[in-house]
Length: 420
Image (cartoon, one colour):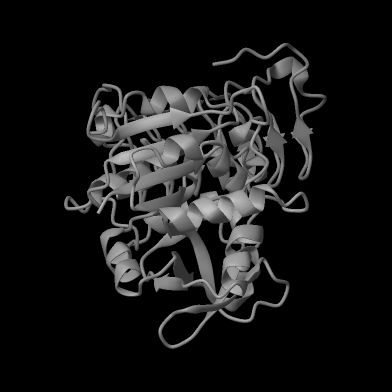
């Protein structure tokens, strides 16, 4: 039985705002030292799937650099699988930018079906979860399915964000509705699909010929297969799964990991999340610093009388004496200067927050509004960035029109940004 995994990693991720201004959504840092796509890649190799194709499109540079030849995941293989990254190309006829998830697979299907894999596992590169795909594959074979969809139960009020399934007692899918206003059930699509190769080939070609199609798995491919009475089954998954497609869900997934008994077990040595890392010195926390319920990556330096609470810090973050960070995500090599207060904020790489600034707020308030600071930006001394305000990438002191950035406002640089 030959299985090939295809990871969809081309999404722009516009709902992640300034975090995806310079990178694809799967390349966004997560949990300090990882990228979002690390979880899907690690799920594959931990499930003994080593034949992987990654379909990239939007700003793929950092994603390509991160994955490289695949060595951190034991995917640097020449003849027995390995990882291959595919991007859109201009062909003589109709190949072009991907119009949807199904179109991305269809345009690359000549490569995907090469070597005649029995099954093709379609995965999203922007979800946070740990899943052994082997039981799902066994379920698919046992049911003699054409398509198996991984599914999970969510609160009824959240179901409208996803594709919603109705199933019979054997978990055969009876209906599939993409993002309904009034969800008929709590069982939703996780974006994990296992297809028989021939079924996928036929479904993609039929969809390609339909000029009215959005060429999307959730909107078009799956509903058509269900309607045609194909053997479509839902595989029930009961672990932690989070679609981190919005700023709030991205922040919430980090906060979930800081709970006393997190559902996502990063410290489980039997299911390692692999990533590409660089050498950093050990984290340093002097006795007079206060760190509570937080995750600190290598190279962090929490200085005297600094206060870090319920936060996630990436490698190389420096918190200067007397600075306060609460319920926030601070990314690689950012510096929070003395006297700054950062609460419920997401601060991207290489940001400098100068002294006596206040970013975000609202700790303890059930109405979560996050302040977001983009990559390579500076927040000058004395500035107030209100909850719900944004500072784009590469912003400097002269770009701020006043001492306060109000909720709902976005500050953008007037200079020519540099691409790093």
